[in-house]
Length: 220
Image 1 (cartoon, rainbow, N blue to C red):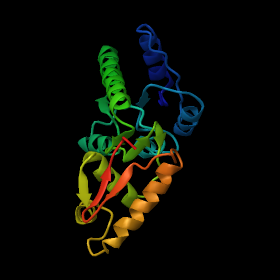
Image 2: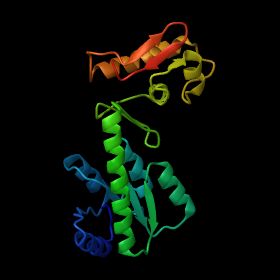
Image 3: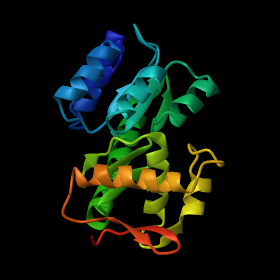
């Protein structure tokens, strides 16, 4: 929990402990971000009005390295804050004051959904695509992709096992100029393949389809 109000932090921590939810609290955002690199957490409860940096700016910092669920808990009830928080990757938004029992319910609901999604993804896919956070995991490892590379790979994942034309990749990618050459797609594909090979160099997961474009397969 990243919450600068000590009294609220203590009340929520003690209440959540009654439901076997262990809480580690940080009173300022940079301490909370540091804790994320030191421990494994299941979920973050994030206040918005924080010292040093606004909570809305904390969300993308978390999302740069993690897909951990985030519940925003804030006295700010402006719809704009809620929209921005959700757009930047928050999973839920609870305006204060609220009944702690509702927080318990939302935590359990999100964790249950997240756990089910993770199990389904691990059982069915080597690639895990999170379009909201703009993250792609390959074999449980986060790929470091440029905006254009993310666009191309996400399209291939969505059309997995089907051929996608270079033209479609070019026009559907948000971060590639429509006036770019089709050959630019080949360059980007080559860069993506290289990054995949750094994790698994024994198989090729993106195959060229003669006369059409490319196909992503998990069969290697």
